[in-house]
Amino acid sequence: MARVYVSIGSNIDRARNIRAALDALAARFANLEQSRVYESTAVGFAGDPFYNLVVAFDAEQTPREIVTLLHGIEDRQGRVRGGERFAARTLDLDLLLYDDLQMRDGKLVLPRDEITRYAFVLRPLAELAPDTRHPVIGRTYAELWGDFSAEDQELWPVDLE
View (cartoon, rainbow, N blue to C red):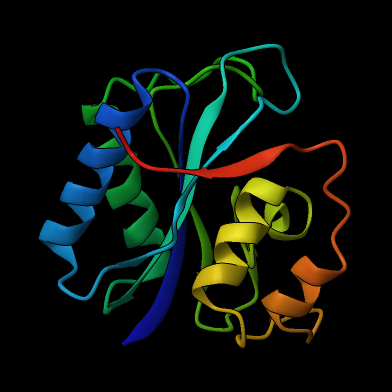
């Protein structure tokens, strides 16, 4: 079993799509844990605010199998692929961590680079796994969040509608 962390984000029909993702993951992985939900301004483009959170679960599937499962959940929520990288989306599910595995296999990169780049990924991850260490940097997520400069990335906790 591997400990897996996945980021979830949406800025189109946010509450419905986040709930659908959580329901789909909970139906597949009985031990689903989640951070609070955060609202954030769009990063990299002008658009509606996002809801973001991170979930954790134990899985027997390989990283590639988990990514395929995540893409299926996104597709069922109307995710359109092939557009701009920074754009509005119904649902975005990204595999962040798979235990302490480090890999680069095409588009699958673990740990995901966004962990240390974006407040909407790091803050909920630090909340969910504060004492877990980044497999490359070696510092805990709580330490990384404590040193993170989020001045240009507004983020605040919200109750899911």
